Length: 385
Image (cartoon, rainbow, N blue to C red; front, side):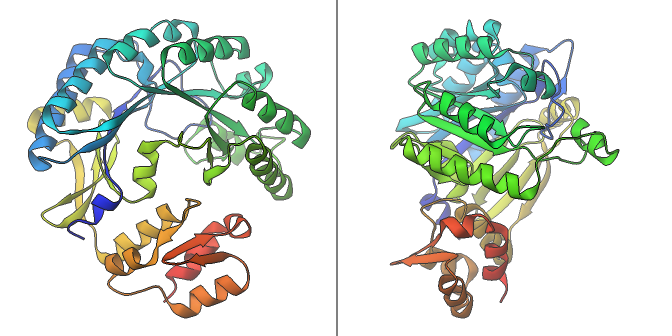
């Protein structure tokens, strides 16, 4: 596995853990704080970059992603200094993509130009719904009008703008989702992330669901119909899915997320951030302390990672399939064999191909449209030796 990461690329993820409010569906590591010491956070990020640069000297950075939380609450000066330090510490690709997640409030939209001047080239906006009533249900602080205004501002500033929508919401008919999706596609967007609402343990929605108080969720059949309609409408608009939940025009795919799905290496910096980094020929999984204060304290001691674990061949092959088969381009069978130490079982491949779940194109194994609807089962069958 010494050089396997090169086939996916190398990225840096910066986690900003703060939000203005906690959304009821969100299980990300995000926190609401009345006061944020921006100087302390900037110093911590810069210290972590320096530490990791010593371990990964000479690697070419293909992508940087500021995620959260709500990174558009980070001072633009902090973002600019982090970007400048990354460029100083590593060589960077000529087409380096630098993405910042943002919430579409008018206040944050006014900061977009400062982020652009600091080096951000792409914004991913958490719009989530084009319906004011559903935005309130989802705990969002913006209106549809504010979202549209922020989007237009972002498009005038950045080379590329993406936004997220959640479907299969409470009491949402299929026809309403189809109309909402077409409206989104008419906004001259080049990338959409479209997620089916899932109820996660430890969230406000999860608590309500456990008490039987979260009503109006779609059944499995309606959820499947919404997924199918999403694929059809986006493909017809020239934005086919290149991953299970992500759609883009040709050339507008998220380079950062492609590094994850193509099983490249990425540094995870910030509270609760995960990483995958190859050191001394072995790929390691990293996980940082989740509590913001605990992470800041740990950075000062030079040990921000709660865990740094070498991955076995079994771990690597499982992750490679879990990530790579989400992509429409599929996976390389020879790369899998090199990672796993042995090829996928021919019997499993033959069976899945016969029933139309996968197809083979030269060295690539690709999940079909039919297979995507039961992707977890397809992966389980391939892993069953």
